[in-house]
Length: 254
Image (cartoon, rainbow, N blue to C red; front, top):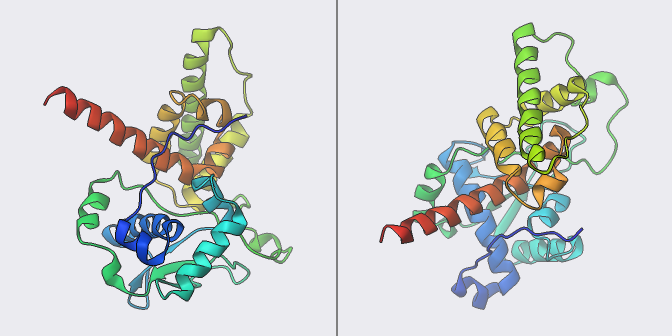
């Protein structure tokens, strides 16, 4: 199936001339996430604000690049002293790289206002280790906890059922209702997003409502596990869609 992201990508001309167009596009991405984390007072270590992502996730965000091309771009920015890397992962087996700007002035102050006005989207990604963790049960982050308060479980179930109703309401227009899911599995996937990935519950619900109106994502994200897998891409697309609609509304009232 052909992907239809409908996302506009931009870059700074001065950076493009100095470092290359690909590098400039990637710099803009890091500017956004690092300043968002700074505005939300997140991922601050050793005097810098950091962001992190896996190569696989970068491919989802930039579908026009291969993983090999992304690795080359990141290496180029590191070699040119634009980015530095670190490792602040909680799990010892996790090799996900963290990134920060070597020169903090590369993030202009104007970006702070943009990140503060965004909807407090959490920029966290499920860790992608480069080797398998120990096979001990307590080392597996996706294990169900021994005890969860009944009211919390009920909340996860409520979110799962709400997502199913949203999908059904949209599908009923075409008289094609989805198969009833295993709500226990759906609830557990929602628990993972909130408890393990530290996703914002309000943002999860907003994405669920937005997905069914996107021609591509409504055919791909049909369950919470898929939403969890594509969370960062969905956040970016939803933000871009909102920006586009806001511009249209602004033009109407000019």
